[in-house]
Image 1: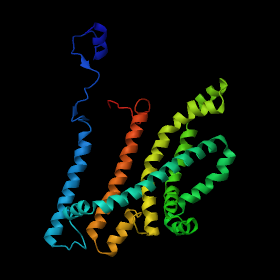
Image 2: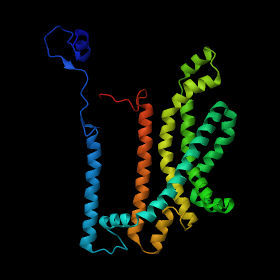
Image 3: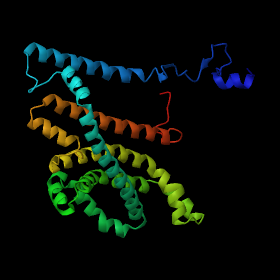
Image 4: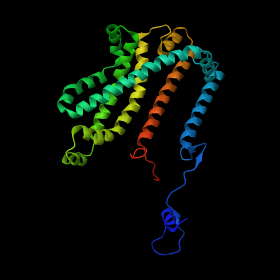
Length: 295
């Protein structure tokens, strides 16, 4: 190793003593491809979850609680495998509506955010209606949407979009307006057009805010789809998981109800993790929220 490389790898004392040089950077050790610093954050929730499930199963068995009141975790897992065909088909229906609603929320939310930041008059005229749409409980307007639209799938999509739309819009507006004013003045000084300023300055500045809103909207889109399915209450092969929960409740098939709830929860967690991974990939090289530091 050359002297230059050695000096860059260690900290040499400034007082000229022979004190032992210490490394500047720590080695990032990994186990099974995962950093040792990450493992505690994975193991602790898993251990707590297993202890809670064990206590749940023990209470059900000791108290001899009937399955139509509170089934044990083992029975729920067994039901999940036995009814996988029916539940997975319904899960696919719910996830399709969720994905379509999220895509629509991103498209319209980002588009309107760009328009609002380019025209304050337009923002002041339309943004209050977006707020009204956000604060109105979707469960109260879902029956009207179902009646007016007629098509069940489209109605569910609209309800899920209403819930997921506002975080994308508000966060993106905040991000577009957060671009450094000194840099804006510099762009203006060099004669940059609105499009150039938007593309090279404001959109990159808005990306972390947009991704934060996307994490929120991903879960909200799933919640909106499930709530709308509860209101619609339609049966058949095109029914989502919410209908399966209602159906299981009416038939006192409580293990199936819990199995459907687990599938919804796992889907929400998967959506959040996927968006978190996307956020890390897009921000890890330049944004403080994703750059790994020593301290």
